Length: 502
Image (cartoon, rainbow, N blue to C red; front, side):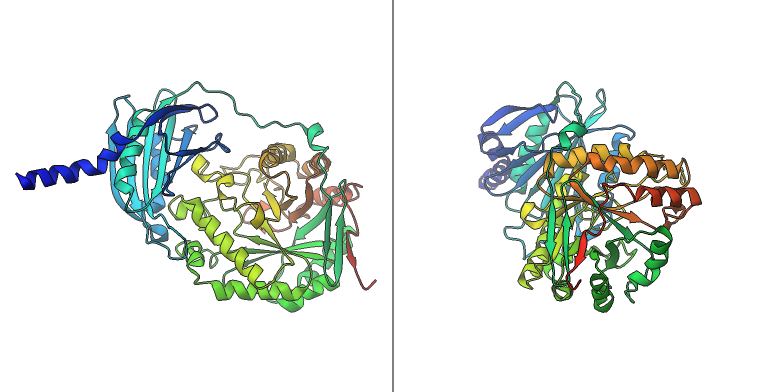
């Protein structure tokens, strides 16, 4: 009898806290659903058009996404979302997988997974539980995503099931970002930066042009390859961008020459060894395994003694990047922890001339709410610039669609002004393909819209052929002439970068 009572006790205990919880029915109008929520949970509705966030007294988190299935089936959504977890990427380990039909007649697909605890994260939560509740009539899935620890996993699994069991879809409404260029024009954003060799001033009503031009990072010969294009165009690009991965270091001599020539640099440091998507470096950054490497970057940037834009782990909402949460449990906290560690090392090394640029892609891949770019934002104190990236890929590949400049950047600008209007923006890279439309017209008409978006202070043209995408300025004579003519627009400032020895 004692043995039976003990077994019953052990069975009941994990679930007893569920029934001792005081629940209240909550209505999340922007997220278009309702469910019961324990009264002890704190609700964060600041980004509720993307996610409803709940926080428990012990520091566990519940994120709730109301995901419309536009061009995907429920199996596509669930299987693709969890593909890398099932493949055990990023040290994640699937533990349980099942399905259930609740009393509200919704079919639910449930996953339990984990990863090793990370000592460098205080009160690290390494247990994850997810319920994907499918509503076929409205073609939507409500995803309940839990992040907790071993001590609380049984308790909160039961809570999450109770919440899902009580959920229902509310009437849909149109969620449109306000696109009104007349309102944007009132925004003021002057840029003033000082260094040992240069000073930079971009007034409220001006924008500076930059370029990514093919070059050798190892040799740092940025100017040697760029100057023939500049001479032909009669245009000096005062802002130079380059890429590096975790095999590269800064070519200090070549970089110093850029500043001596009266230009500004942006380094894009991508946390991978090029094309190796099996090595998930983000987790190792948090663990401190790359501290010495990052410290060297900080020291080298500090020694440039001039403003440097430092773009780390860009396009994180793209599944082509192994620093996307798709590769590490759909947990944006890990991206943010890695970002903060890099930022902290730069501060420790007094690399205060580094301007940190946070930069998603304009389209998320996969385009699911758990992969929204805004979930990756590290916080205002860790970001100096917000980067915008959107390409017109043309029609070189069957998935590509010709997109006009305004159709890319007006919605993106409006969305980012909603969240980050107090940060200056820059278009960190963009271009237009030659195939699929009139590139010369795209440049001629499109560049006129920059003046409607005054918080964009700089823009970098990606001047390179990438696979079938002819992004280079001289992809045709007409495109080159259109670009050359567009550079004479008075909105595009010249001589914004001043050498102090002149």
